[in-house]
Image 1 (cartoon, one colour):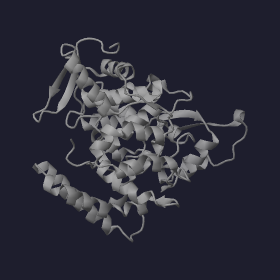
Image 2 (cartoon, rainbow, N blue to C red):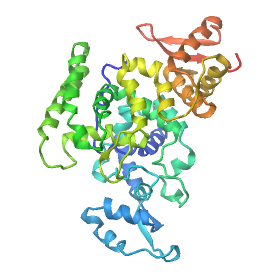
Image 3 (cartoon, rainbow, N blue to C red):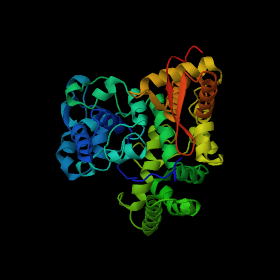
Image 4 (cartoon, helix red, strand yellow):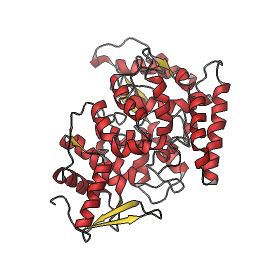
Amino acid sequence: MEFMRVLTNPDRCMQRLGFLKYLVWRSAQSATNNLATLGKELINGVSRKVSVILTPQLQEYVRIALTDAIYKNLRAALSKPLGENSDRPVVQVELQDVYLANSVIQSRRGKLVKEDWRKYPYLAIDLGLVRKGTYSLLVRGQSFLSLVPEEERKAFDKQEFSNADVNPFQLSPEQRLLLLFSFIEKDGDVLSRLYSRLLPLSEPFTDREAGDYLPEIYRAIVKEYRHKARSGDDLLRIHKILDTADKIEAWKGKPYSGKGARELSITPRLEPFVDLGLLSKPDPFAYRYQVTDPTRAFFEPLINTESIDYFIHHSFFETANKAFNFNAEHRTDRKNILPAIQKAYMILKSPLGYVPILEVALLAGIYAIIESGYFFEIREATDMLKALQKEKPELVRFNVDRWGALTFVKFSGKIDSL
């Protein structure tokens, strides 16, 4: 169980979740990587120039989003009124600009710049997709990568780029569920408190207004967890949160810069939830947000749950089912749960055959609700495996941690037909 569910390295650049598709794919190419390899290759890849036909969407994006002086000539060249399709010029822009300019993306901000090369990989680490230190793929990252089609991976390659209707910044329902679960698992203590303050707002709110809630939220979290600290790392995290709370308060009343502690801390708690379908933006270029029915449907149960741990194990899929209108049925019988677990197990099993129980249950739950139209909770899947192990100990094996909690599972044969 997490000591404290708070993102370790939130940053303003952590906006579009689509960049994670490249980072996770790149992490899977080697058993060990380094921050420079991941960060610089990401920036170099998405900032490569490609030639595209100028569209009204791209013209609007360049005019509003690319305001830095280095884009002055580009804005001037693209400012002329467009003619018919046959008369539209071919222009060169960065690969990421092509995807961000597409109106299918609800938020058209989040362009990465070269000075942020070392920051974005930390989002993959904080969400449990990539291992800290070696920057290699974790099992959660393996699950995510299995949900990313080949054409979306190739969309980050200039050599593979075409005008095909593939936008890697658009998330599929499967990808949304896995990333949403990861956000709640890793940042749930902040998110539950933050959205309890945002849900009553009937009018659109800005990132600054939302960010002003964070000092109080951070201090409430520290008050709850300070006595639970068991290591020097736990204490360092507590001191860092308190220091951030002080820095955010210092920005109150000051002119908006987009680079203060408030914006750095609040952006990863707002912009990604636009990608996830749980917040809307009246203006895709502005940092203003609107609470929607899906926002309430998802966060109200989270806010009212007895603990984040209970929510992710007992209520996540039911809540997501209502928030996203999947209209899936709740089923807990073996003929529905075990085939989904078997499928997830074959994707995730290690060379020794073991898989973290949480990860196989999560991926199985995603398969079930999206592909088969029914849902079950992680706890229900775990309990079923426990019962099956008692019946057939030669088929199902568990590993436990030093506290006796189940951690890994291994199957010596197929379980989907039991």
